[in-house]
Image (cartoon, rainbow, N blue to C red; front, side, top):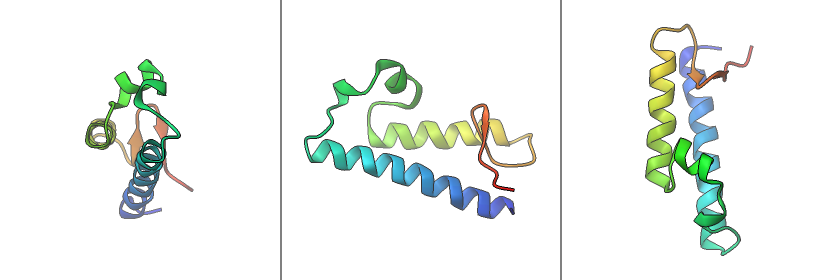
Length: 78
């Protein structure tokens, strides 16, 4: 999979995750205090912070590697 395709794939994952959280919050299904503190600490407690931390993590891990990496996981689909 090309690097461009990897970026598009992980961008879609990030968008879905964050939109699902926002939708659950708006619907009253999930409140921020129900999200475990370690998750909020790791990726943030609001939409923009989560997107920023996820993108920053990709940049940090992928810069020197051949592929798109997020944390210790690899989102390549080969």
